[in-house]
Image 1: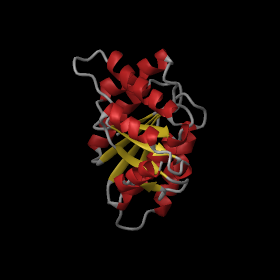
Image 2: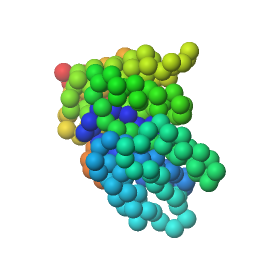
Image 3: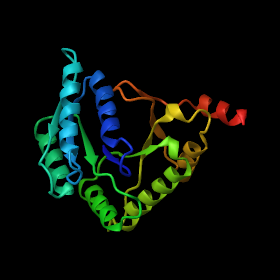
Image 4: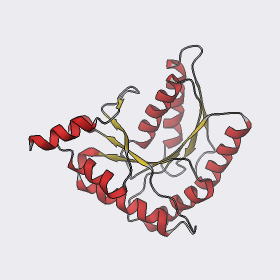
Length: 214
């Protein structure tokens, strides 16, 4: 699974929440540190991996961090991580990527390369529910960049979303609805806090109730 999105939306934190959920289901997980740009990104994942191991009970899943430092080709690191996971019988690879603005063409090309080279099973867009239609613009342009810069006959697209800070928007669910409508893809989880357990399924009944209240 490859986690993508703009700067500062909590990709690494929500990747770690997904990792915690997988650990509870006894999966063997490799986290690939492919944000080779932001200072402190690798160290942040080290902390998450250490915390997740500390929380894990005996007989549960396993988590390990794959890292190659900074200034390297992120697509190459992801490829090496997947090969390492295959050889060592990991069940899941979670790929952390650098945040980038949706209009930054060089960085969007680099992201498209990572996706094209490694063909992750799922491409997960992480966005803030709080920013409303700006998140819709981000999602649309990320999807378009994956198509335009892939160089493949059958380019990939975003497979689903995680929306963070969902606990702060009250009944303002219009942006979430627009994101699923535009892409035709689901919202896998919503973030409702900072702990590893603050990852919830989005209930359709909650969305419908919020819309009918208006």
